[in-house]
Amino acid sequence: MVRITPRILAVACIASGLITAACASYAPTPSSDLAGTSWAVQSIDGQPTSSRSPSVAFAAEDRISGVGGCNSFSGLYEALNGAISVRALGRTEMACEGGVMRQEDAFFAVLDSAEHYARQQDRLVITAGDGRALVLAPL
Image 1 (spheres, rainbow, N blue to C red):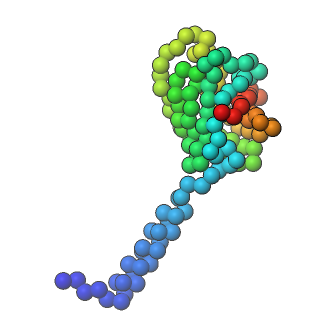
Image 2 (cartoon, one colour):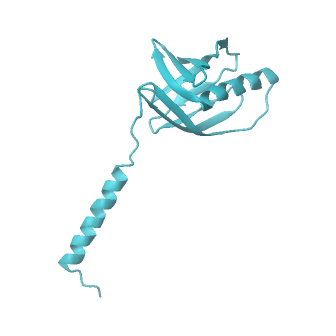
Image 3 (cartoon, rainbow, N blue to C red):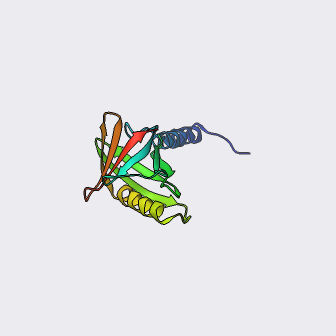
């Protein structure tokens, strides 16, 4: 039989408190005003999208997901004070008609290298480091 001494009880309480504090520090929090919003891409680098336009959803847990026009995708994002980065994007690998695939490739090229975002009235503009941009409207 194990005897619980005051010293063992104190160590167990401290350890429990440290574990609780560590877990609480990893609780998801909204990273920006994008959290909880969903958007349809209106144009990619100035070119209007086709009827199979990409869409993007920003979740509160720093997760991003959507459809590139043909393939679904998901990953992680960070957005704060106009700066944005998208990483760890995974996507399905379906093949679609040539025009849809070219549009999707252009969409992912901008999203993969996104550096800035701006809310302009009812639009969201995401810009890559080289100046290419996505213009999105709310869903």
